[in-house]
Image 1: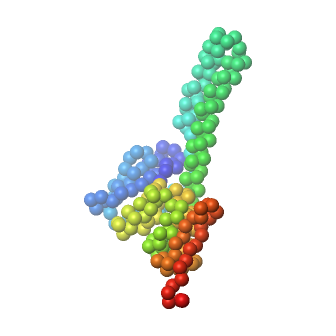
Image 2: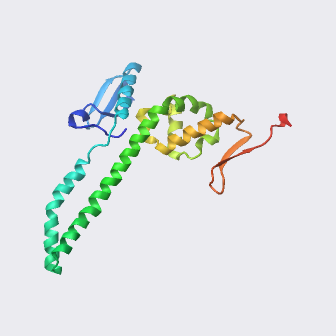
Image 3: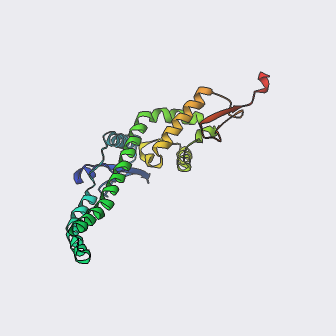
Length: 225
């Protein structure tokens, strides 16, 4: 998961991910350090619970690095204005240019990064609200090609990988492999497959050419004729 630690002290306790190797669980912390504990199902569940708690209370962090860049760059604004005055003779234009340079780089970058973080937090909350539903129903629906509608190849690959390891496809440790759109599409596909309950050999769900939404095509079962 992404780093939503509040400060340096918090980063030393904030778990980003973990892996199991040589009978041990190695947890990667936001501080850049790692924590190693003996593997047991209980220890793994404790780590998962902590990561889920982190996700539940995640908030966008202040963009300290960008703020530092702005602080460093502000003294350069006056030289830009002076140089422009010497070359063009206009203080107002020089100051205006300096403000434009600052605004064109810092504020758009800050807006974009904040938007990405907010969407990631929205994904985390969506995952926490629907993880049981997704994990319980994905196995029932995975034989259906319809399950892949609107889902990225990266997400499908991750589901198959977790299945090969006999792991639940959706967990906080691999949440970065799914987008919010992936989770929503998978949940909608599962609900649709469950609702219709058709034999997958007789049913194909696909997008219409006009992109107006999914259309259901069916062939009648010979037994029903």
